[in-house]
Length: 477
RNA sequence: GGCCCGUUCGUCUAACGGUUAGGACGCAAGAUUCUCAAUCUUGUAAUAGGGGUUCGAUUCCCCUACGGGCUACCA
Image 1 (cartoon, protein in one colour):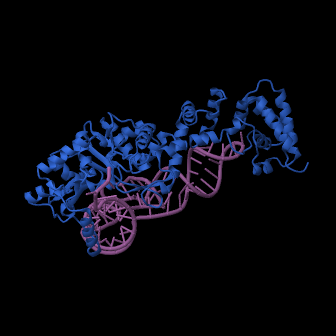
Image 2: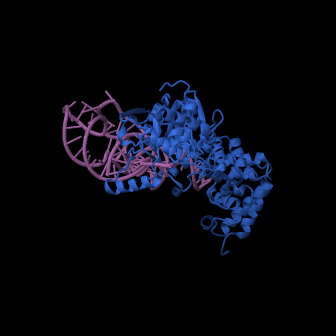
C-alpha cells in the first residue's frame, strides 16, 4: 500500500493498565505510521466516568514509552471535548440525520426482553422516528428526557478493510442506534468518528471487535459529511484456551513483562509476529527493522494464540544480541541498587559471562549470585556425584596448593594448573573441574570454570575451595 | 436467535490451482563441551468434515461443524 503520510491513532480507555492486546494494536499502528512516514497519535477515551482513572492514563503512557512507541503531538482527551460533541449532535439534529427518541429505558428494556424471548433478536422499532413537531415541542417544554438516534438509512453498505477485504452489511440489520444519551453525552460510535475526523486520521487500525461498529460509524461519517478513512481490523489475541486474552491467562499487563525482566524489543518483536507474517524466515527483529518491513496486508485474519514459550525464546535471542552495557543499564533501570557495592566493570564482566545463559534480565540477576556471594548451599545431586570421597578432597587440596604458588592469576594460568594436577594424578580434568565448580558456585551450571575463576580472583577462589574442603565429602572419610 | 468474520503441525506461520505441504517455538534423540546454556544435525506433528468446479484442489464455490466478534443510554 502506498499511503502517503498517513495519520493513525491508538485510542485506549484508561480503565486498566495497557495489556498485550492493546500493546499489539498500538504497535501495529506505530509500525504502520513509521513504515509510511506518517504520524502516530494518541487519544484517551476517558468518557466512561465510572471506570476511567487518571492513574491508568499515566500507566499507559509509561508502558508505551517503555515499549519504544513514541507518539506524535499531544494526546487528545475525550473528556475535554464535550462542547465539540454537543455541536455535532446539534448538527445531526438540524440536518435531520438523527432524531430525538423519548422512549423510556424501561419501555425499551421491556420490548427487548419480549422480543428476545420470542424471536431472539431485537432492534429499536423506530417509534420516535417521525414524531410530529407538536409532540416534540410538547415533550421538550415538559422536559421529557430523550436520547438522540441516528436515522439509519436502508441500504447495502460496503467497505474495504485492509486485512479482511470487502465487507458488506445490510443496514436493515442495524437499528437506529443512540448517538447521544439522555444526559446529553455522546456515545462511542459518535465520538470515535468526530475525533478521528478532527485528528485527521486517515487509517483506522483497531481490533477486530470493532468490525461490527464500522458500518455504524461510516453512517455517522456520511451524516456529518466527513470523508471516510480507511480501515484495518486486527485479529484478536487469544489465550491458550482460545479465549480472548485476559487476566485469567496470567501476565497480560505490559508492566508485568517489564517487571519480569523482558526487554521491550523482545516484547514488540514477539507481538509483531502474533498475526503478522514478515515474509521471510527471519524471526528476530529490532523495532526499527519491524517498521521497515511492516505491511498491513500481511496481517493474518485469524486470531493468534499467545505462546509464552516463544516469547521466552525471542527474549533470549534479544538478550544475546544486546551489548553488555545495555544489559547492565537495563538491570539498573529495573533495580537501581543491584550490586551497588561492586565495581561497574566487574558487573559488566559478569554479564558478559552470563548473557548467553539468560532469557531475561531477571534471570541474569538470578544466575549471577555466586559471583558476589560465597555459596550458602551446594547442589545435592552434584555433590554426591562429583565429590564422593576423600580422594576428591585430596585432589582439590593439591589444586589449592598449586594455586597458592601460582604467579599471576589468569584464566589460562588456573586452567593450566588444574590440567597439570589432573595429569600428574592420571585422571581426566573433568574429575577435578566438577568439584571445583561446585565449590565455587554451589551449582552444576554456569560458564567456563576458568573464566569464572579468572573473574572471581585468587582470594575468593581459595576461600571457597577451603570452605568446600571443610564440608565435603558429606559422609564417611 | 440474527448479522459479520475466521478454520494448515500442540502454538506462530509458508506454499502463481501442480511441493516429498516448508520454516520457527515446543518436545525427543544425537553431535559438541568441564557443567549448564548456546550452536549444529535428525526426528515428532497439520490442510476441520462433506459436496462441487478442474486433468489436478491447502488454494476457487457451496453446505455442515467448530471457534470468535457484535447485537448497551460501555468503549
